[in-house]
Image (cartoon, rainbow, N blue to C red; front, top):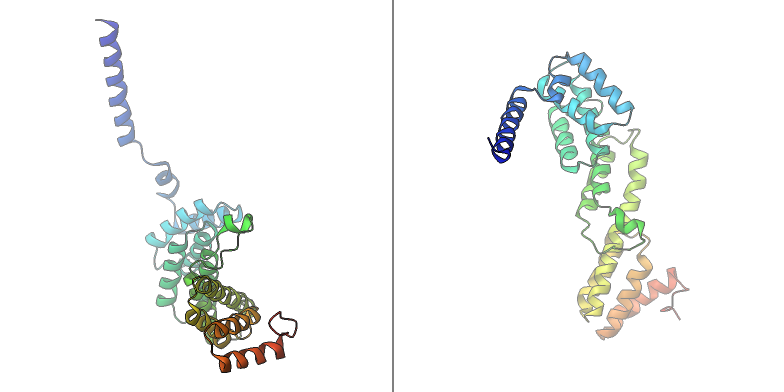
Length: 255
């Protein structure tokens, strides 16, 4: 037998052995989870979470959730799974688990926590870590996740005004209002650069109407003054300028 034929034979034997090994060896994850009781698995999940190993925790908790949907730990498993998914940045899985928990357990004592986590998840999904690290302001990016987060926090506060999460939710709603107002201002500036002054003025007025306690009111008024000037609408310009001078006398438009 030539060396070449011997080599090919060896490769074939190793391939067959490898395939046999793959088909006959149980997955290591199954070894870990397969024959353990619900309580043992839950203790393991708690241990991995305490160690900060949230990826492993999601594996164990999701196994528990599917294997023991009505077990004594089922509610806490779902709540822990929400947190573990959130920590590893699995937005869709977090939201889906939250919605299922709230739908199936509308009177549970931790529904307020679930709603709070929904707000946090949507709020985090709106962030762009790279842009924040390098200091890039992208206020013009799609704010739909921030709107969802605002609705989540508002729902929490309306339904559970005495919740221990309500105070923080209110603070986050203020932050989100400013984020949404900045988006409107960014779009208004975009329209102004293209001389679409009606659309720009409408964006400024929208900020005044819907985000009157935001940090962007001065800019909204200044945009309205400039747009009404360009559109030759003296009465509207006069009203906007009057409000601007009254509230922001240091504005360059006030002089």
